[in-house]
Picture: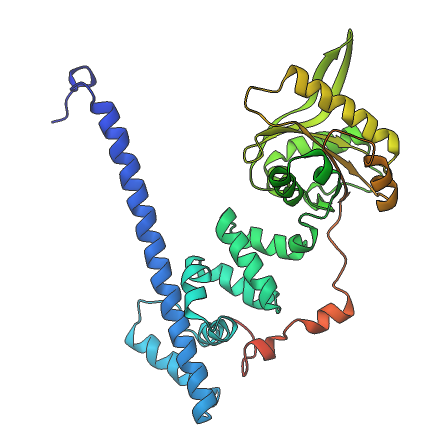
Length: 344
């Protein structure tokens, strides 16, 4: 019989909360350990298949027979289909170093590893997206989106004055957290959208917005009011970045970048630093998002601006199909999974 809440001993609530936390952490460690063991098993099976085919000339039919025998021996265990065995072979071929498997891809779920195998051919790209998936905890769907929108090519490419306006360590980190272009295809908006419509749509999909902004961004609000000189001024979107420990003001522009945009952002940042910056916070950073920008014009503009400002483009549609040269560089299903018709 359970005790009434009023008769529980002093400290019981804190003890219970601590136990719950410990149990959750143990369950997570167990799940991670099970996943790591499974991925390690898949890698070893893939390496065995690869070595026997290379050394002894075993053909693709051996994989068919192996699939049949393993499923018969372990009927309650999934993962031994012909398609998955061939994925294991491709996995071992893509990651030949056991240490790298243990440190990185062995800690990712199998679905994310298949995504890396089938969508990326360059080993450096695979490793970059694998490490990013591990750091950010991306699901398979999110990883697929980041690959499709070419995150690696966009990360850190905004035009900024950070190297001059921020200390060295902070400038490098700030540069890396900004992208160019930003991908807002999740809004499904027409190209002729107005600024306020774009802002409202982004706020309405704030979860997707934060995913696109990247790790560390916390959304504060839209149309953030600044009362200056008896007049009201409004920052389109205001964030706080936890690693940079600073406010990040975002100004949305539906047209091309103009030099006067930087002057207005400089005004916002000065006001935010003087009126809303908390003790211990670093100087606020500005990001101007435009439909298009001329890099030379932006660089000339930011030379005379003291506040840290970045300028980047945004896209409302997904990138067009891969250029022919890049598409040809990707592995075909036959190259990735030899002897296989279609994945299961």
